[in-house]
Image (tube, rainbow over all chains, first blue to last red; front, side, top):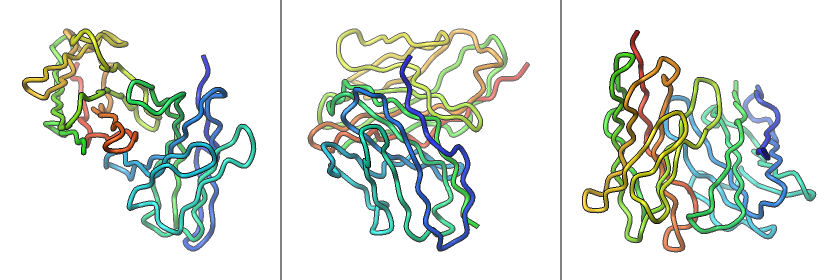
Length: 115
Length: 115
């Protein structure tokens, strides 16, 4: 069964460093998302992406964050200068369509630890 | 805008007992509702979803949920708990064109199963 994959599974970085989290969505999906889950808290929406553009972003997704689909398969989340509070589990998701009936398939997540 | 409230951050049941995890939603349009399960240090797995049609939805691992519009509820149940059901459970609602198409998660309910 097709699945969303994410690399790395764990990333440890120093405060102020740039990190890139990578995701490979399901191949025929057109809509891509990033979510974040701070330890012990709920999963929060960061950004959605379609047709090489951001469709929607949350308040969390400030100028430190960017997303890109550099080729036909990868979808990346870049954090330019990490802060301690960026430590979280980051989930990538993808879907075939935008409507609510289109299931978003979630990847296993990347745990980011900022020291 | 859509929102989700999960009643009870922790629920403890004995093995073999009924599992009931409560979820209430708020939506100005017909909602698309989901339950996800997250095992320790793992990603999000879809348990079941309601989009349209039958209001009693059956999912994986013996779970089911009933959409009750009059009560704006989508409670998750399982007749007999198993030790392997111990996990975090998230109720979620998909936004539509009025609120973006992101998935909005509840705060989660951690299920403990006692032997």
